[in-house]
Length: 169
Image (cartoon, rainbow, N blue to C red):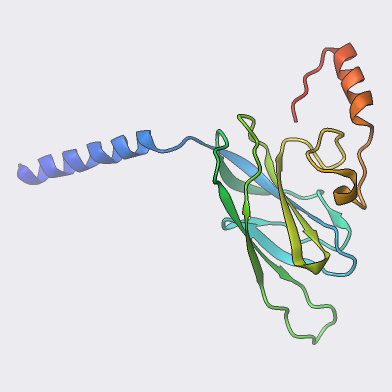
């Protein structure tokens, strides 16, 4: 009987802990390779894998699933791990790279995880429900290259106002 009570108390404690945990949302992971000649063989964000990406390509593939808190909070960090592919057959495999970045403020609107790889092993992390070519994507023009927004923010806002659309990005 005592064993059954212990098991019951243990299960009750597990439910209490689970109910106190943070609510998360499942999101996809995608990447953009802005480099001139480095193939991103594989990458991950906090252990959630992303697609491989040729130089100056990306955004066409998403991998499911990662999770993010339903609401952003200060101090959130993400570990980005990646490995470049060999430039030529027979070349040694380049060593893996890793960086820890602050998760940008996405407020109460969770979006997908977008990882941008640049020359000199620089990495940028974006959380957005829009794709890179959307005018409200949270990135400046220079950082988007070779991609460009399909319209200006002003034109999009005018269209959204006329159409009664929402600014969900």
